[in-house]
Image (cartoon, rainbow over all chains, first blue to last red):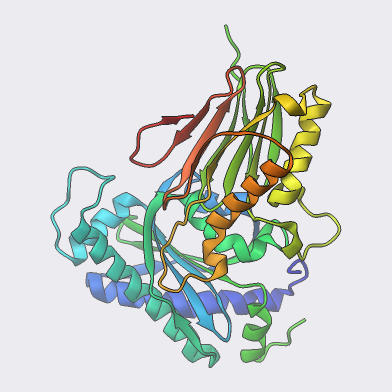
Length: 205
Length: 165
């Protein structure tokens, strides 16, 4: 169904990523008290297999905050970071001492990450709701540390019944010299695109 | 020198292996990795199943049979039989079907992992295929590898020992 999205529709979705992640990056920058760079959002219709490649492959261990977007344009949102980036983030924001073990996290660290993810995803979503005038509410976010394939596939179920591709809006941000790197994935449900287009005054299909 | 060949099975994909070597699929979350093995003919099969039933499919004409439990199982059995496997000798093992995220409001789509497992079990009964072992549920991802010569299923998870079924 998305094979024939026009260029201007893709541009609109990029703008959606720009607004949302831009605000989240600003929030992160305030938390860190440092500038955070953001890359131009990528909007792609990707085969399921290739989606995990963005974050290092299906077996790559990542930390993900997942929340479901409910309201006028439902969808799934992930904030994904690598464990090393997460440790740095914790050190900078929460002032937590770095554990020498890079792969394990304490309860305290999880809780802090959960809250950071909550703030970032919330600012992404609220700016998007302001921009589109759509009612978009986040569910309580959930955190997982696991293989990227196992985590991200959960966000693709809605697409599963329609084909082997999903459309995702991917924004990558970087702090300092690639020291903290993370991705925002917004995967609107297939039915949500037309609502977004209509809300933004762009002709749907 | 032994040439160990590993056949990769992608998401919503299935494949058959004849003889030694292994079949592998990575990053199973709510998806189920279902494996079949005919110990006499040394024929193995693996499917990475994403959804419990094709009745919810809204796809076009060229849809992917490996994605749904109720279409992947007959397709995989069919391909194994064509390679020389005998249905009555086939034993099944499966892993996956986790619930990666916990939510207060558990809607049906959030329960996709357990539903995948239930659906696979019901179908195995229908085909009279014994389920020799399983490692399903939980809230963590799994990578599985089926060894073609023995039918042993290896399960790897983050921060856990390798399990052998």
